[in-house]
Image (cartoon, rainbow, N blue to C red; front, top):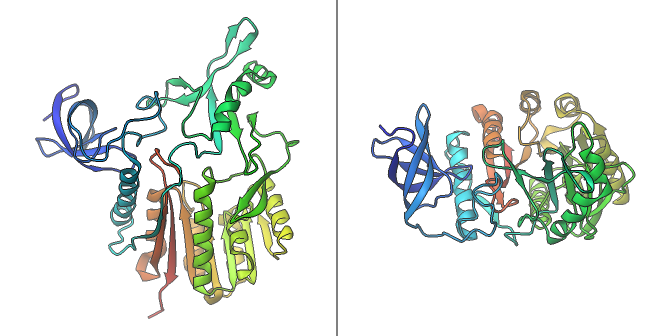
Length: 412
C-alpha cells in the first residue's frame, strides 16, 4: 500500500471532472493526479490517502500521452484557476464532453442520456473573458502611501498569487489592470479595514471599466448584445463571461423553445431576461423570475424596448415559482431554468413535478448539481431528457456550460 511521500509510476487512463488525471496504482487503488493527460506514463508522489483513493502530484513525465500542449501562462500549475493548459484545445473539449456523459450516468443515474448536440467549442481559447475579479493582498506601504496588490489564490486556496496579466482575459482588461491598481480608488480601498475585490469589466461596445467592491450606482448600464440585438445589463448583475459562446447558448435555447411549440414561457433565475429576449415573439405569454433588483429593472427595460409583454417578478424562485405555476396551462408551457452553481432548491423541483409543464430547459454551469436535479425531475419516469447541448464557456478551466431539454412523459 503506497504511503504519503512515496514515489511510484502511474499510467493515466482518464481525466475526472475537475481536471485531475486518473490512474490505477499497483495495489489496484485509484489515484488522482493534476496536470496529467490520458496516455501519460509518469513518476508521481503520493500526497494523501483518502478512504477509497489517493491524491498524488506529478514529479516527472516519463512518456507523454497524445494531446499535450505547452502552457501559455507562467503561473500555470500554481494558480488555482486553469487546469487544462497542458492539453491542446480539441483534447480539452473531448475530455469535458466525456466528463458530462460520465457525470450524468454516474451521479444522475441516466443510462440513456442524449449525446450533446450541438457541442460548441469556444471560438477563442484565450482572451475570451469580459470580466476579471481579483482579490486584494494585505495592505503594504510604499513611497506613495498604502497600496495593495491584487490577484488569485493559489491551488491551496490560501496563498495569494499576484496577477499582472491573465491570459484568459480580453486584452483590454489586462491593459486596464495597472491603471486600476494605481488609481486613487485603489488607494482608498487599501485604507479600508477590509479591502474589497477589484473587478474589471468590458461590455460589447469595448469600453472597459473597473470598480472595487460593489459597482457604483452612478455607472450607466452596460450595452451588451443577445443574438445581435442590444440589451442593457447593470454593471453588478450577472452576465456570461464569454460572449461568443453565450450567443450559442441563447440561440440553442430559443431553437428548443420553438421546437416544443409552447405558447407560454417561464424564465426562472432570469437575470435581465436573456433567454426570454432570445426567444422573443415566439412566446405569447411569459413570466421572468429574478431576485436581483437591478436585473429586474433592466429586464423590464429590455422587454419594453423589444415590445415584449412580460410579467417580471422580483423574488426567490422557491417562493415565486409555485405561485406562478398554478396559473399556467402545463401542456402549453416550457419552463427555462438557469440557476446558480448550487442548482435548484428542493422546493423548485417539487413545484415543477407537482405542476408538470410539458417541457423544461435546464441550463447549468455545474454538471454535478445538474445531474442531481435532473435525477429528481425524471424520477419515476415523469420527465425524459430528449436533447442536450455542451458549450465550452470557460476554456482552460474545469468548467463548462450544459443545456438539457426535458419532455414530460405521457401519463400511464
